[in-house]
Image (tube, rainbow, N blue to C red):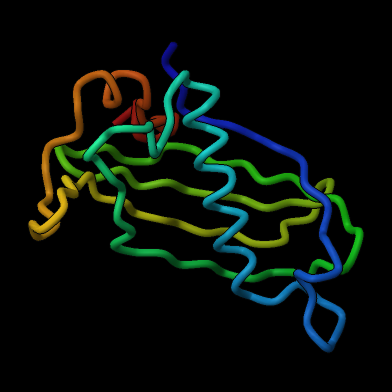
Length: 144
């Protein structure tokens, strides 16, 4: 199954909020990572299969905040595969509440081999993963 995008609904938990009663900025990165894992599961994959020596190191993460989220707000997290190279996957993520844009972020991960006693090493993304997670090409990019 090829999958390029996934959406999930989430509810803000009390422990995710700060003293001002709004979601602490660090949680937005967790929301993106939860959505990434859900995308992989929906594609029949796991970011951390048991017994594998392959991992996904974060090399870049950014988030722009547009509106606050508060305790018990329901919102949607939509993540899509934006770019796939030989070694990296870049995601684009939108968080919305209805038609209101809450935040937009990006995250780039690199495929690495992790073996005990050896330094982490960047490797090519296995073909099975690359073929299941394909980038979404915007209509403007298709035209050219």
